[in-house]
Image (tube, rainbow, N blue to C red):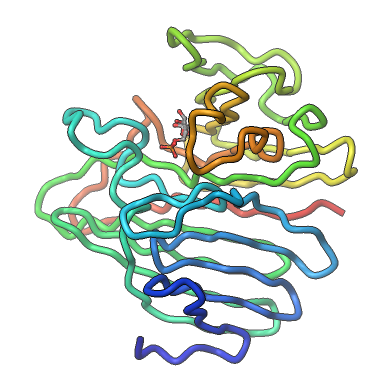
Amino acid sequence: MKTKLPASVRLSDEIPGYPVFEIAHPKCTARVALHGAHVMSWCPADEEEVLYLSPDAVFTEGKAIRGGIPLCWPWFNAHPTNPEQPSHGIARTRFWGLLGAEEDESGVTIRFGMEEGIWKAELTVKAGAELEVSLETLNTNEIPIVVSGALHSYFSVSDIGNVRLVNLEDADFLDTVGVSTLRKQKGAIEFKGEVDAIYDSPGKVLLVDDFSGRTILIEKGGSPSTVVWNPWMEKATAMGDLPDEGYRKFCCIEAAIANDKAVIVMPGSSHVLSTRISVEE
Ligand code: TA6
């Protein structure tokens, strides 16, 4: 890897053939894998870890890391027309290229890129007192392209029974547990069983953990949908890369572009899907 890294970034080869950028900066520590341009960890100074990473996550080419921030791109869930294509796209299961890394007193910025066929993307991670992740889809083709996706963020919680999500009250959502059903959210979201839901909401979400007393603010850009997910017990038990009780330790809140909200990107232009995560005072 030829790009020079700033002093607060170290390239770890602890997992052979699987480079991980380790950030140790006065504002935060963080880890980002080259595979999937995947943020695995972010811990602001004087705070606890914000993201959940499964202790059973698998680090091998072609397998998405369970936890952190997987990039679902250039489509969300199943491919719109071809069931042979992988769920959640091609970005999370391949190595990206490193485009650059910089630091200043506010934190560290690392940029990654990938290109395959008609698809080209750049991912910018800014890790400091806040974490910003921006996924830019660039259309370098001569025809429009249609993109969806998600920044499938896993947040660490004291216990799933202790948390509520605020600011999606009254939002319409597609409940995809069992037969997909359109519903309207009443009050804050609480987790009492499996949750898999696509909210029509471009705005922010607050994750309130009533046991730890911590509130995490999740802001979004270029994201008409917010996906909320917890697999609960039965599905967690069926996952080889999540401990049986692991579902109690996280919830996913995803800056997403899903279903009929897919974005058309015209030739020569781009679309940025982003999230900014911060711990509320
Ligand atoms: O974002 C929610 C979701 O699409 C769920 O339906 C669930 O399957 C989850 O993502 C995890 O998907 P994965 O392919 O990472 O196991």
